Image (cartoon, rainbow, N blue to C red):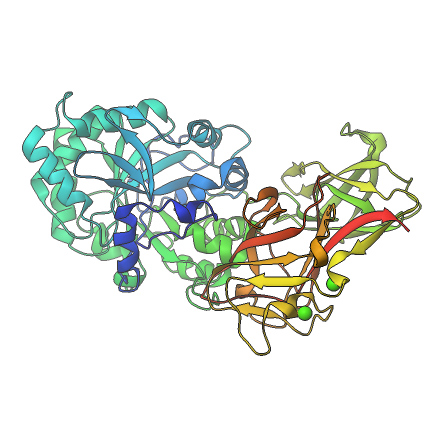
Length: 576
Ligand SMILES: [Ca+2]
Ligand SMILES: [Ca+2]
């Protein structure tokens, strides 16, 4: 499977050695694969027979799964909430690397060492929330290994030297993982190179004794998978309960029938790759997926999507729900995909908003209409309901000055209401006006790199959206120094997207301020931002009472090796 991309600016500085190795392999990866879920305890809640993934020929499918990498670690509760509302029944965290000393690394993050969980402190609780009502998720799995990384080779070596008993580091570390994150139901084998039956069987038996189910994510080597399936289940009956066959990349062309033939009564699930690539023009859209999965109806016990990281990039926050709906509709899984309203305008926590303003938002997937609440506190009830409507814009007139308003958009679905997040904005203070301090002449723009003569740093500050600054990297910076050592208390900035290629737009950034150009203070952090149009000016507010001479944006693009933007404004509010 593919190495997931670093999620944040900070993450990109923390790439461990093993991942540098992996990055060097990315360009030749073709058979990277997802696998997906296993099943044990999906009884009863979803209207399927929910036995064990084996079932009769006429069973409807039982699970829909999605694989994801870095965003499942760094995305925090926001990502977990998105998954809970997606309609997927199974989440597969991809993937754990087993180091030669037994360390467990989730992508590039050390999570277990010497029998102790050392990962992000709030991660276990975030994962536990996946199964807390309301949710569509019944099962959580963690992958082990991937294409191009010798994890199963290392597991074989560890077993050869220490066995799998309670004192072995392999046993201690997988026990520590289970104790830290008891939400994990299964470990998904993504061996794509070692194929050693004896050690893989011992590993599976050890995991069974630690109360894990085991699932497989094959794309080839049927004999190996058939052997360990029968050997693990002979020693620990019922342990291997799902097989997720990769139907993409190296597994492209796989069909369920030939795989079903080698796993006794168990029916496999099939997986396909979502839209991906630098322009999201490779892979399958949700509509194409639905058609593909319909073709497998009756022959699979589920379906899965590879890969959330791409779904997030190509479809945004509603994408997971769209793909879950595609599988669920095609295979007759009765989970509902619903999601919340998103992307408020004005941006959450905006200040100096005019007294007449248009609220807008992105509709949640599956929403039939919207309840809009507005109040001067976060206490909403029937009296704060401003409107119920089908469109996603609402004009407000004659708002009070200098007032913080709270608003929330609840999405009405046929299955119920999905309550929105609480957003706020604060109206303008009379007598204060906005001044773009980059409009002064003689300010100095500086950048990591630029495309001269026409797409240099100065083009980001020329008050012309038709001109842009462009750098030939995915991660860059641009800064502005006010002329004559002047300092301003900037509390708002705007970024305008350039004329073309949305994948080059800034996606994540940090705004910092400085008075010497050496020591920088973080002022605002934004992640996973979208510009939905070309030449779109977006406005961002932050709290600041310090005057700075330099302001700087460090940013990542969406994908590819070019970053660009049309214009930046640095705004100070002052008496006219
Ligand atoms: Ca300007
Ligand atoms: Ca410009």
